[in-house]
Length: 541
Image 1 (tube, one colour):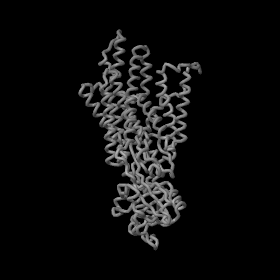
Image 2 (cartoon, one colour):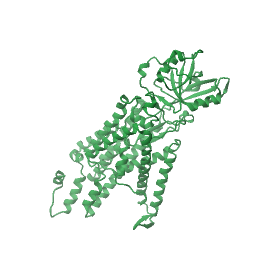
Image 3 (cartoon, rainbow, N blue to C red):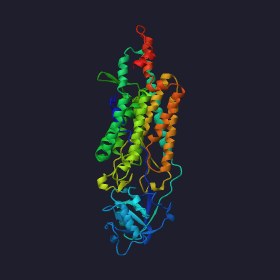
Image 4 (cartoon, helix red, strand yellow):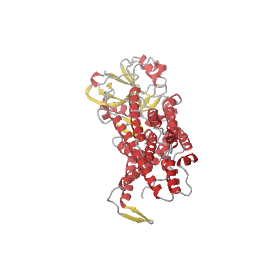
């Protein structure tokens, strides 16, 4: 068959797919020009916190400031200010040995208008301890050490800078793209799971070896106990990733390449099997293998390898990552089975708590005051000890390439963002878990519909998921910070299908699952010597 799926691969892959939610980064432009030659100028990327200081939206409205190099000065005390003073200047310092807000306070007391922090890895100031420096009002921004050196080599040491942040378009199309990808994936995955269930029902009616078929399905099914163990393992994994990121990230990349290649093969092979052409086979090890599947295996492996080699090429590698990610999510949704609504409630409820904890609670625990979930989404560059709790690395910088967890749908802002030519493209992110976890509920609803001869649960749960995504985007736009998407997706989907089940008076059957009822009904209709009513068999289960 080419690429074979290990029976344990879906479980292992799902363990780390439920990590991440939505996040974004804020960039601005630093326009530098030679003071003695205004025609000689160059733009550089910088990062700042817009909630602290507002920048003008265009170069024409920006104020020109003389740049002063204080990278050789700690600027931790007023005595560190040079004799000539720093009034009305933009001063450049390096990180350490004191908190960057302490440097900003000293610079402000000296009359400086802006503090630029130059660092090799372009860290972004954390908001932690900002409340201790309420009187700090000057602009605090971050530039790369490489860009600062280039600035001095290109423009000399007498430099004038203007800093501005071009306005974002009111309409963020990346949210629409992510919405379409997420809803399409859960809808198709759920529908595919229903098709498999229908085929299994037909096979159960035709085959005599029903027990063997049951056992074949059970090892891909999540029992309530398995769900609890799975969530505990998820918590352990995310903590290990936080503390040992620079090693484990490569393990995650390797797992993603293998799992996504297999998933892409499974998805495309399902289409090929329905094609009337390409049925030529070859014999290998006593089995007939379709030639087209051999080529398909090579193609899927090639896609994963190309992504692995060029994964840090953010201009186009995100396309391959999203394709592989969609296939990965589809394959898990149609493969993993929650046997009943009780398992769905346990899984989604526990992962909701997990998501909220690692996004909203962990900032009160971590040294740098940042969410573990958001840091893993952006890719923590350095550990807390090296950062001294003062910085969180900014996402996607030319001067600081880094490895990021490939468990995200990534959509960069390609249109209407003028910083793109200077900075790396800002991206919107959606974790695989925000697709797979609700997708498992939608898949259960579709299988239940197939067994009961309706479509109400599948349609309503898919619409509820879409509404939950819209609510997530609205809250993200209002809060302007990463959000645990499951906080909105889980209530929308669970409450909707619960209302449907209660209104149809099917909650008991929906809660326990009716797959056993269908199986037992088939046994009842074919076993006339020792008949047992379906309802009695459900109670025996």
